[in-house]
Image (cartoon, rainbow, N blue to C red; front, side):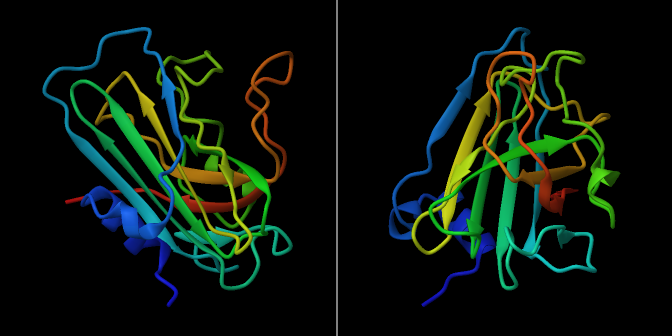
Length: 190
């Protein structure tokens, strides 16, 4: 039975993630500034990637085939932001880069703008949310990142972008991850 990706995130958040497969890798990012007290924000996005709906849009059908889907949840408290990504139907046994971006998805890959940065100008996993994901033989994968800062409710990320390559973690191309493959627009949970 194929479980939609957004249900896998809900099951994981509810503590029933054990039935959805192996635990997602947790990518801890040390904070460089204290969290904002009293801030609680949840952002979500998900769906099957199409070529028309900018809430879940595919830019490269070779790397995000028809029927592929994903869901993302970013939960921010006064102490940390925890972001989880679940994908299904992507290319099997492949590592994709994935990051939160500043603007919502659009018809063009660059519409989502640059990476969301908690500390403007800092390109590293302590300032950005990096969710690189390795798919299994069926094209399914999960990833979680934890950052030691709260999202600012007045300046929230607009999307999650899946990239063609793993994120470069050092050197002059740090933070890059190849072409934009697909995008999920984030909305604030009510």
